[in-house]
Length: 226
Image (cartoon, rainbow, N blue to C red; front, side, top):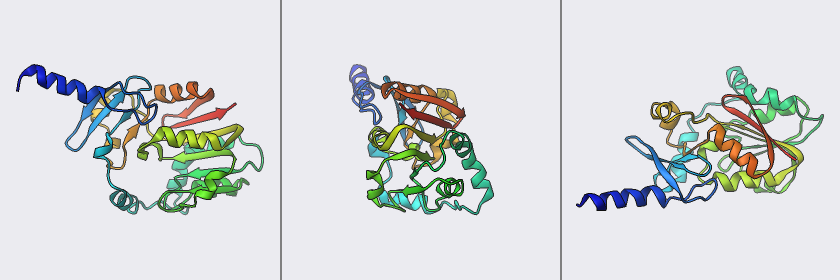
C-alpha cells in the first residue's frame, strides 16, 4: 500500500471522530495499548475511547457487580470524604441533593443524610428510577462516574439543568496529566473507563457554562451554578 494512502487513512482516523463532551470533530490519536485506542479532543482536551471499543451493557454491569463498596466500610467512607468534606462545608442547612451513579452500595448519599441533607439516588443499573431526574436539587454529586460515561456532555448538561441557581455539582474522577503518565496509568486498565478529564477540560466546561470551579483535591472538582 502506498505510504501516502496509509497517511491519509491515519489522518481520517484521527480527525473524523466526534468528541463525546463537546461534539468537536478535530481530535488526535493520543495513546494505544493492547486493547484500546485513546483520542484527545483539540477543543476541550478530553481523552476518550471510541464507542466501538466500549463494553456492551451486560459486560459493563458485570464489572460493576464485582465492586464491594459498602456504607459500613470506613475506608470507603474516608475515600468519599475527599469530596464529601469540602462540599458539605458549602451547603446551607437542609439542602437537598442527588447522588448520580450511586452504584450497588450507595454510601455518599447516606453520609449527606447523616449530616441533615435529604438525598435522592440514581444509577442506570442499580437505582434506575428516572423520576428523580425531573426534580431540582441544591447539589448533585457524581463520584467515580464521569470516567464511565459514553456521552459525558449530554449527562453533565442534564445534571446542570437539575441544579438550582447557586447549586453545586461535586465530581470525583482521576485526572489526565501528561501523555507519559497516561501511558502507564492504572486508571486506563479498567475496561469500563472510557473518558478521562484533565483540569483544563473541567475549566473549559466551566467557562462554557459560566460556572465557578475549584479543585479541592487532585481527583475532585466542585462547580457552582450562578
